[in-house]
Image (tube, rainbow, N blue to C red; front, side, top):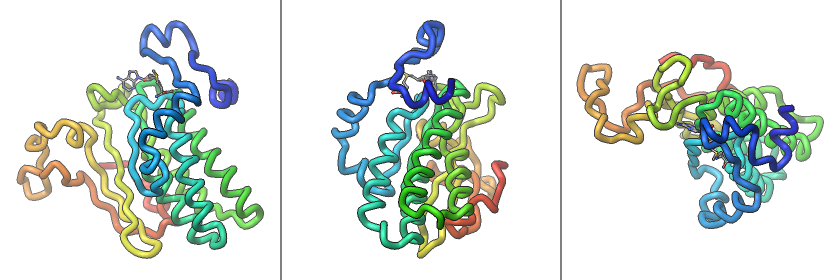
Length: 224
Ligand SMILES: C[S@@+](CC[C@H](N)C(=O)[O-])C[C@H]1O[C@@H](n2cnc3c(N)ncnc32)[C@H](O)[C@@H]1O
């Protein structure tokens, strides 16, 4: 069932879902035509994309493919560099969907794209740490949530996104931001920082230690 939903270009799962959530998936041709309007950005490895109604990832999958094409072209001869830039590429792709099954399918789909590309390039030498980092990032970047009220429909907790930045060499800095504040700038002064002062719109709600790109999963907490 999952395979069928993901890999066919099916545009509708059920009439009820279309009526309840406007769930009609975009065809591959349309996805490509729309992404071609911002072709340069889709081919920039660290260009950030957020799909606020990502479904099972039709746009995000193609964006990831395009980024990985560039990573292949530039870094295929050096596995460590390929892994680092592929992780930078995947960490710049974000999605939200109100249907939990869509977010799970989207994560699985992006992970599979990464795994297939990685094993095709480096076959026997693939690293478990690299796959763990990718899986960890996808769990943080593709979130179950309502993009209209910026909360998780199950917990009512605010949606919090992680920003991943390559700070030097192999090191990645993670900062977490409240999605609502990134979108609704008028709310910026309702969030207070650690000193009790109004936080700037770009102030993270959590700052993490700098980590090696292959060790991202080791700092395993989603707590604010
Ligand atoms: C028209 S489909 C598009 C899916 C995907 N972007 C694509 O192009 O294939 C709309 C998607 O929005 C999701 N959705 C509907 N209301 C939403 C909301 N308030 N917040 C987040 N996602 C929502 C649906 O579950 C569905 O997956």
